[in-house]
Amino acid sequence: MSRKDIACLLKVDTCTIRAWENGINMPSQKKIDEIEALLQWRH
Image (cartoon, rainbow, N blue to C red; front, side):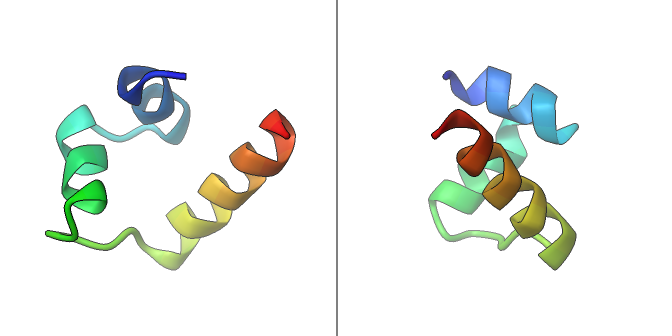
């Protein structure tokens, strides 16, 4: 799954994903929950 795919599913920009990956920003608790659900779905 690409960064673009993840951004689309989470309804955020790819720059936001990159910032999370690089520790520049942190996702909100709501987005953390969405990421967790996405990862469980993909597992």
